[in-house]
Amino acid sequence: MSRRIALAFTALIAALLVLAVVPLGVSMTNNERASFRYGTESAAHQVASAAEEFLADHHGTTAMNSALAAASARGDCAAVFGPDAAVLASTSCDAATDGNARGVLTQALAARSDTTAQDGAWLRVAVPISDADKNTGAVVLARSADPVNDRISAMWGWLILIGAGCLLVGVALSVWLARWVARPLGTLGEAAARLGDGTLDVRAPTDTGPAEVRALAATFNRMAERTQTLVSAHQSWVADVSHQLRTPLTALRLRLDLLADDAGDEAAAELAGVQEEITRLSRLVDGLLTVARAEGSVPRPQPVRADTVATERVAAWEPVARERRISLTASPGEPATAYLGPGDLEQMLDNVLANALEAVPDGGRVRIEVADGAGRVSLRVVDDGPGMGEQAKQAAFRRFGNPAARGNGLGLAIVYRLATANGGTVSLSDTPGGGLTVALDLPAERHRSGGRDESEA
Image (cartoon, rainbow, N blue to C red; front, side, top):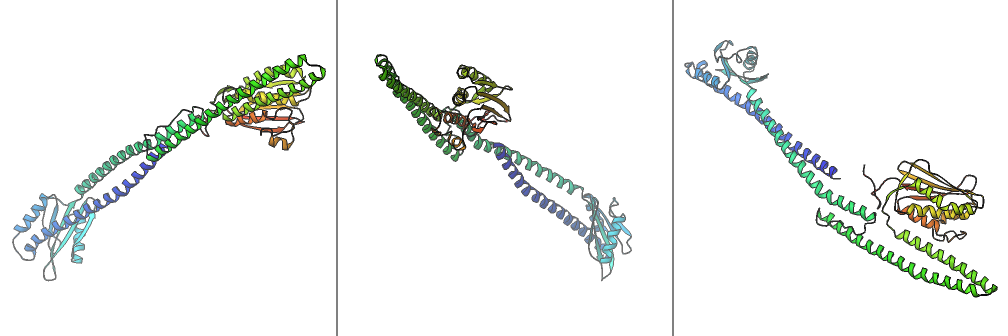
């Protein structure tokens, strides 16, 4: 962002400098050349006035020679011509008597008016001298344009130097302004990323940057405080519920066990049914608490070897699968690293495997496939059980969304909450040949968007 701001301001300053310096330079160049032309014509008229006393008034040559000497002292070349274009007097240089000078002289005598011509580095002015409507002679004065060209070059050099200096100052100011605006935004973005990673006590500084950025930082801090309060209250509520529900249920189960030992056969059967309901209620409470924790958790992603976790979970569930004569295997493939909260992948696989082993009949098969590519890690739990209908799939990720589920109807809801909290997705599809496939698509890189870490390129 700071680079874009600096480039934008630099481009604007450069455009303004070009629009200001170029017209100024062109105007000053034109003024220099006009002044040079006017000065040359004035000098030619001065020599012509002195020569007119000799050619038209038939006075002596003193004034004419003095004018020629003054022109020579200034570095000009001048020559006085008679009516037949013969040279009557001239300075020591021949720029006023060469072929180019005679061409200007011919034009001036023919037009009986001043004629000016630029030829290379020389500007020549021919002034005719008339007496009683006839030409009595003419004066040609030539002046080198090298000095004025040198002044124009020096002027452009100074303009370019001043423009470059202004541009450097503008670049420095643009960089300072860009950093002044962008640095607080970068700090605010880092604070937002840390908040998304679970550092709930992070706050953004509110004493730097423009007023709008400071106001945004203050708003972010209020949001962070509110989020911290809500998450803390939720965690406290979960802890209280866990204590208040689990303890009475455990005590009630123990007392029923004692009663069952002393009860008759008929009462024992009834107590066994009650115990089974209490066990189901305990699982339901545990599932609800797990969903609540998943919804209230803010994961702090860290690298997790998905292939290793898949192998470990297969080993952990192998005794259950063997008891039900179900083939449970893992196909980890190449090493695959996902970025997830600690323990989240294990919990997701445990819930999916529990559902699969519950649904697959004896002699069935369940396998885990792991693949890595395009910045994502894919895990697929494939079974050959009865599968799910389309309506059941659409409601599977909601709490108690599948009334026909054999468990408490919370397993896939927990998987969905954990996957989305870590920036992943979960989907259900039919297994070719029959069964259900649960696909987990998880991030393989650290992210910084949407409350997640993102590595910068």
